[in-house]
Image 1 (tube, rainbow, N blue to C red):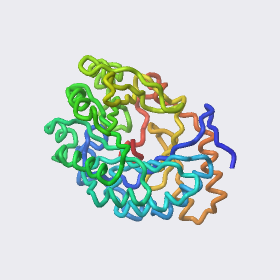
Image 2: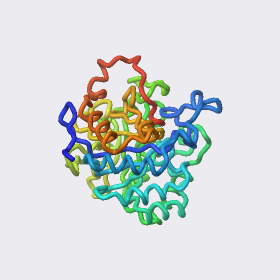
Image 3: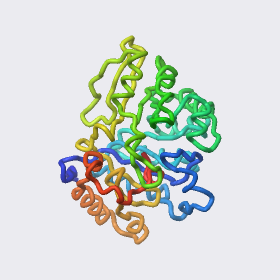
Image 4: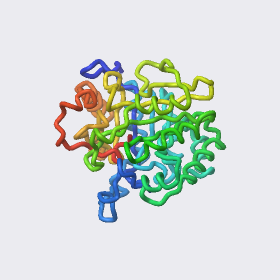
Length: 337
């Protein structure tokens, strides 16, 4: 098949697959407890794409140029037997990389070993504070930071050499953990990445005053631990790279708010119930589950995928100041970060 190009000449290379909308955390910027409580209607089992359906769709995306797969949630590890899905995705010719984003609190050594054996290549862990009280306040489920750190250790023991840790930074919430996080992961085999607090969805109460900019994060770290910029690994790399001048590691900055990277975005997103989204900040998706369950053929689904990408004109982050602020946006927990 010919390579797909959208309205801004961006090709499709990455597919993010949410395998569940459920999570064992209630982080205030993603799944605030006052919304996602005991009365909230999560997807039922039959609503979720089966592993077979996910695998079939992934084959079609790969035929259109996708090379990287990332499994997300919710918290993907609450979906049972995730290693079985990884093994099936790993069999697809053309897939070059399979990664997982997790909070790692339930990543046992056994799970990590099964995922590694199935073909998972990389793990990214969400960890927003190293200070115990701050971390528990942010996850709002009394999960200790030690559980996450143990999950990271389990991943290392299972043979994952490439582990990244993502920290979403919010002013007056966890910005005082920027330097402690940098110190903790400096001179380790973990790459720490700082993410500007984003206005994903409609439930997290986002406002610009709560954003700590990437440049401010660099300033805070650089005062104590001198940094220098590093060239990107490839065109379109999301995280801006900085390394410690003493050669003891590097950090990354994901600056969707203050320095948008829409121009190089090559990601398509598939929700747990099979809706296709062309942007993290999208307001509506394309229902592929209905096509699968109505026995649509691959040729027809291929054309739906192709037309969805060709019509893609998203650049929300570049237009944030001019965008309609009351627009409904899909929640991060629904399509992953």
